[in-house]
Image (cartoon, rainbow, N blue to C red; front, side, top):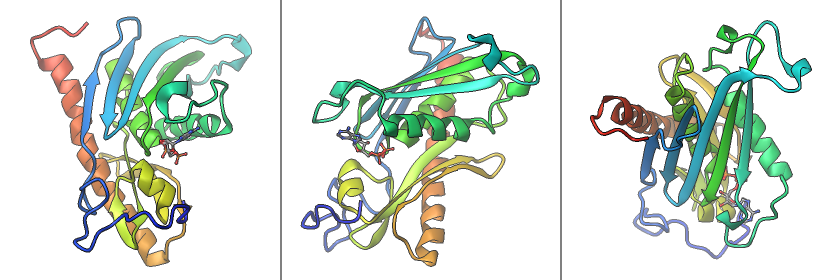
Length: 245
Ligand code: ADP
C-alpha cells in the first residue's frame, strides 16, 4: 500500500484498471456449497484469482474444557495460507498476518451466528487459502459464511464481504493484489444486508473523510452482489436435484 511500485499504471486514461475492470466492477465470484464430505458444512470460493476452501465443524465439545462457556457457544476461526498460495513460497508457520486475519474474520462472523443456542460447545471454521490474489480476508469471510449456513447453524444473516479502495487517484471496488501493493488505500468490508450491519471494517492507506464515506458505499455495493452469489450457492445445493456429496 502507498505506491510501493509507483510506476505501475493502475488506471488508464479511459478509467480502465490493469485487469480490464471498470472502477465499480468486482472480479468474477463463484461459490460452491457442500464440497467437503467430512465437514459439517463447507464451501469453495473463487474470487478473481483467490481460491479458498472453508470447512465448518460443530457445534462440538470444547477441548480443553475450561475454554468452554456455560452461557454460550464459542466460535473459533483458523485462516491459513498454503505455502504455495503465493508466488514466493510462504513459510508454513502461522504468521502474525494469519493470526490477525483469523481474529477479524471471527469477529466479523460472531454477530451473525446464534451461538447462544449452543452453550458449552464450539463451532470451528477452517479457512484454507489455496491461491491468493489480494482480498483473501473478504473472500474467506464469504466462504465461511456459506459453510456455516451449509452446516445448518442458525444465523441472523449471511455475512458478505468485499473490499473497496483507491488506486490511480480513483475509488475502486474489489482491490486486487497489484492494486493492494501499488495503490493508495484498501478497505475490506463485511456486511449483513438484512440487518444493515457492518461487521468488518479495516482501512490500510489514506483517504479524505469524503472518500472514506464514498469508499464504504462502494464496498457495500460489492458486498450486496456477493450476497446474491452466496444465496445462490446455498440454493443450488439444497434445491437442485443433483446430490453433491
Ligand atoms: P488480503 O488478502 O485480505 O488482501 P493483505 O492485504 O494482508 O490481505 O494481503 C494482500 C495480498 O498480498 C494477499 O491476498 C496475497 O496475494 C499477498 N500476500 C499476502 N501474504 C503474502 C506472502 N507471505 N507472500 C507473498 N504474497 C503475500
